[in-house]
Amino acid sequence: MVPRFIEFVDELPKTPTEKVRKQVLRETGVNENTWDMVKAGIKLKK
Figure 1: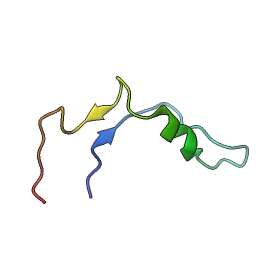
Figure 2: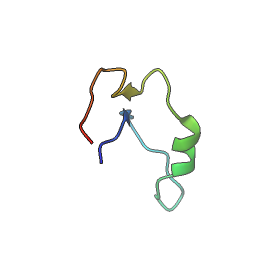
Figure 3: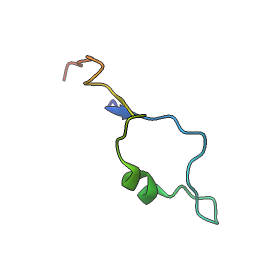
């Protein structure tokens, strides 16, 4: 499996127990800072 979208961030949102808050990442979604494999013109064989 290869991810279509990649975004580098300085710090991941975490809970008080230091777990990653994945829901916050989902809510952020794809934005102008997100790299898109399809927009970059990369096609992979299935």
